[in-house]
Amino acid sequence: MMREMQILRQNHIYLFCMVLFPILVIFFFTSIMGDGLPTDMPVGIVDLDNTTTSRALTRKLDAFQMSKVVARYPSVSDARRAVQRNEIYGFLYIPQGTTDKLLASRQPKISYYYSNTTLTAGSMLMKDMKTISTLGSAALGQSVMRAKGYTDRQIQTFMQPIKVDLHQIANPWTSYNVYLSTVLVPGLIMLFIFLISAYSLGTELKFSTGKEWMQLAHGNVVVAILGKYLPQTLVWLAIVFGYELYVFYHLQFPHLGSPWMLVLLGVMQVLASQGFGVFVFGLMPSLRMSMSICSLWAVLSISMAGSAFPVMGMDAPLQSLSWLFPLRHYYMVYQTTVFNGYPLIEAWFHFAALAAFTLLPWLVLKKIKNAMLTYVYIP
Image (cartoon, rainbow, N blue to C red; front, side, top):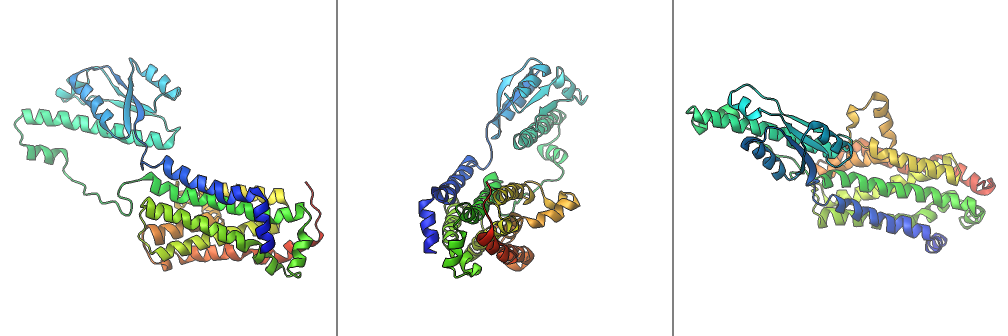
């Protein structure tokens, strides 16, 4: 342990990858989505009707929190080119004669176009423009019915026969910060843990210090591994607990589970990640190859965790493959026990999977010892 602490102090890579970069990641992702939802995303208007009614629709769209009307275009072609130039994310098209057809009950058509190249912006603006289309037809229908002598109660019943009483669980603000930061930040921290775990063993080969390391442990590879990774574990636990304290108590992210569940989840996150990194190096005792596999696995983990796209909607082979990613099990335990507040027994299989990742190095201990004593580093 003393030897490893000296290495941590002398090699600045550990300082950057274990302290500075994880802290930067924490503050970057939680601040970039600090408002919860993106706001004032640029949209355009093609208003060929140019009536009081069409201008009212434009003002209503501009009043939405997520939409901001930044330009008006004379034709659909001009608006389409603006979307292609990435000046706007979408536009609302109101053809000529819309108001006249509405008043004559001839069902005019208005169109909205949006780009899903930027998935979040496109889907949110689609929601706003669809709402505006519905509200516009309802407002004009209300005016026509009032002119025919219907009461407000009759109009309301006709316009909205079923009223939805919506109560969102755990995240009533629909904050993307709560949804995304709680999987992106742990995923990137696990990336650093993967890399540093493999790097620590790879540098023993690179600098030909593996035999010295084994001698200090009297040839006991278990003692050697525990002595090397215990100081790193303490540093990683400090980073993870600091992240949890920051997001769940300072930023007030919703957490219905026990604080002790957060502690347990943080410990399993660190141990499972270290176990995976050591295991990968044991399979391929090469600094370059082990770090490449760890980085690839960590990047794929973010897609396979199931936060952006549900695993149950993936193809069967991908659903099976998702079990091989520690972040997937971390995310399932988090959303079950912390986000929704269910007991750990509801996610026991995923917790057991994290424990299995922690124990993976036992399968390659002999190979690691053999690599340290006999392998020659090849750049």
